[in-house]
Image 1 (spheres, one colour):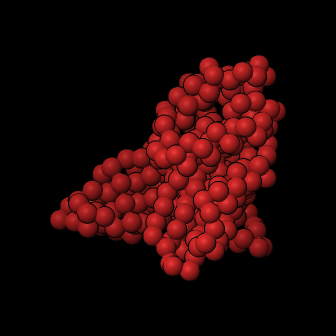
Image 2: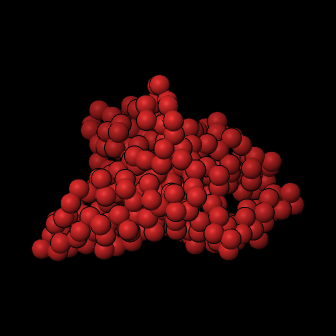
Length: 273
């Protein structure tokens, strides 16, 4: 049995908050550079160049990539042979508070969703998975709400065609238009229950950007990039950098489909203890 003290978890979360908000993920940066090389629209190419330069300045000057440093999400994969010494959730939220303060990040969390109130750094939204092994994997995903507000869920009848599912995903991106700071990474969750499909869509954003792993991902990416929304909504070939789809078995009577869009500043950082 591996024992991990909660103080170590707090220190790790502090570092992950800083890393995620100041250093753009390498796969995202690589995808932006590739899109810039291929972009045919001169204005779109210039905008992509500015986005890339912004990431470089943020890294060099130790500044936030975006002023919206997001609602912090923490994904904790806990090995079944790990024993946490202390309060896990308290340790995570303490790390969020200290990490956001250390990097001079914006405090954007209101305590009551209806009454609002003064903003804070925490609490984070925490997702915990129990897995095999004796490791603890922690991931911080700061999710800005310009793009989070464009999330969508639809409970399809199980008789619908794949084309109908695809149209829903494309129309969700179309409805987002310029308002969520494209080019996007489009996370899609299909299956499970309503809540689990939404979680799958969020987890899809953690997957490294690479060549589409399915024909559906490839076709959807091509269709979305024909919308001519383009970088920052001013037209061009690059409306999305990737479409990542995660699936899970579901009930015979349903077909939940969730879409979670990320802006071009898709930020996350991971460490394994």
